[in-house]
Image 1: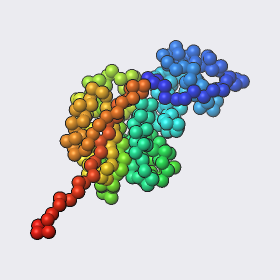
Image 2 (image 1 turned 135 degrees about the horizontal axis):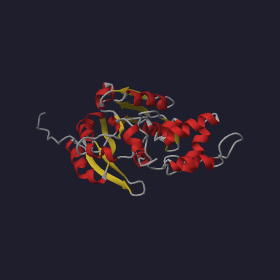
Image 3 (image 1 turned 135 degrees about the vertical axis):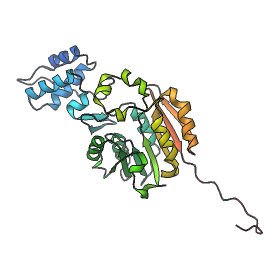
Image 4 (image 1 turned 90 degrees about the vertical axis):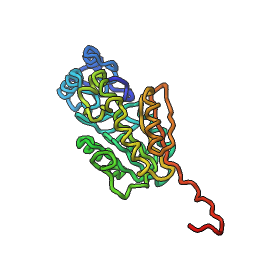
Length: 287
């Protein structure tokens, strides 16, 4: 894994007839797995038989993301179901989640655009039960997993291209709009870790020539869907911030950024302003 996305689970020891966890870890380490001990414990926990464990270890050693092998990803204390081809939620996105959760109010309307597995929406619903939750993605595989992950929160998952996927009744009502759009420049895709490059959908990674194609499209229409005072949150690289802020402000939003150096995460926050007061008219003036 390119980053540790699972919390260690202590107490996973050897079982009669099973490989010792140290042997499993050694096999994974030889295949280049940086967090071999942690992964060995998770694979052993997930397997029903020694034979299934051997098959899972082989798949992991062959380069399949650990999350796709065990069928879930850890995110904000939740287990998010994922599968082949589906974008695996990154730990750095927990910074975006925290900033969005801080803005939540009871009964808020939440939209997770480009939702992938639905991890952000699921975590926001867990943080504030009772929100009206919607999510959307273009990828049919992502939509299938998002529907599973958001079922407990009664989230409505829509399939389609950005805002075109949404019901018109959401227009002008969204309080929190998370849009973790793809932002990797096309030319940088070959530089990504093999787990992402080879096993996640290009649709979930490729942000166009400078990585901001999708963000510009979201920024252009976000004010139409946000409620007054509603906020759009998205990720970007630090190098993309100046251009990203220009795009958000051109869409009529007030925009700022926040950065977490520990997670190496940069979040864009863009708010639809409240309408100003009506101009004062003297008694003699007519509309």
